[in-house]
Length: 439
Image (cartoon, rainbow, N blue to C red; front, side, top):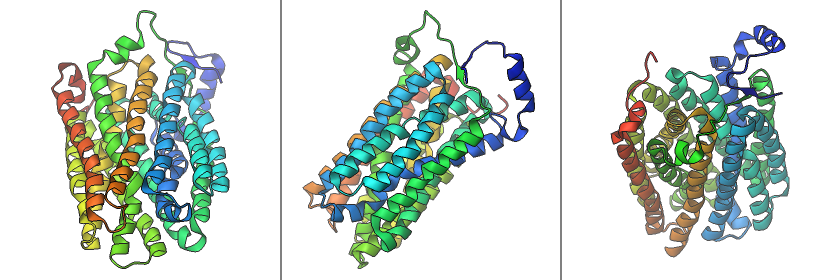
């Protein structure tokens, strides 16, 4: 399908096809958005396959906390590189093309991971390959929403899209929790890897009639001026980088932390691993609710106030969460539910904000830079977390180790909140301060 250049007059055939398009799948409509979100639910299930099974993998693959963190970090590095390349490619050949190709590549790579990951090296290599494929589906999905949903509803739409990610993680954790006691990590990997296959089928159904748009770049404009010298854009990217450090570090280690809490409470190791994944799923459900709510609130009250509120609350949760090991499990779960809500709540707002402060022709480039910085930080976070944990004896019931490891995430959350304050005060970022009701 040929790309549609901005300002291009549609051909007669294209106009006729548009008239015949079922209203329920019209790009930008609620049914179209719902289908796109469902495709993300399927595709993103594998994102947490490794972390969900980590308590078992550490034992069966005989990994230290640092080695375990290195697989998560390798995944994030590959994911960041893929996001960088695919976002820039989307500016040049269209987001729809890259999104569809990435969806099918993710399906194949996910099944390969499920079939070959049996030790440290096979897990490292196959999970890294999966990250390279999966990166073609994230920012390109954001671009499809930005291209087809008007600004007055865009915060809500981004919230729904990223809420689909949270639902995917919750489903993956729940499936892993059920699968591990019955078939070990092999069954868990297989079940979660079916998600991208189903997601690819949904992408095919939903995007067949979605135009592939390529915005013209002005000869006088370059990425230096459009992004690198764009102060609001660079502050959004800075805040997102700190946000990603905290969020991705929390996602990588929370199932293992919960398993450790349950083990300290007297639960057997295999059962604790399964329960840790299942309880983590609840945290992602609250994250999904946060994405939905934060997107609506950001449309009503502005992007920066909601980013600050979520980042500040998340930093506070990171500061106290790790020190709760050894205490009542219900308190750990209660704080974790708030933590899951706050840590993800600002994600869709960052995605919306970057599309509103950058020219359309450079949205992909801006998202590429944002993703490289954010997921680069997300790659370092699990490794640093694991290193701090090893310094204090490895994990088990070592409260000081878990406490100080989560403090590394709290520091990043505090810097994300500070970035939101700086962005709010920036005169050029006035579009992010107020709501868009009636826009």
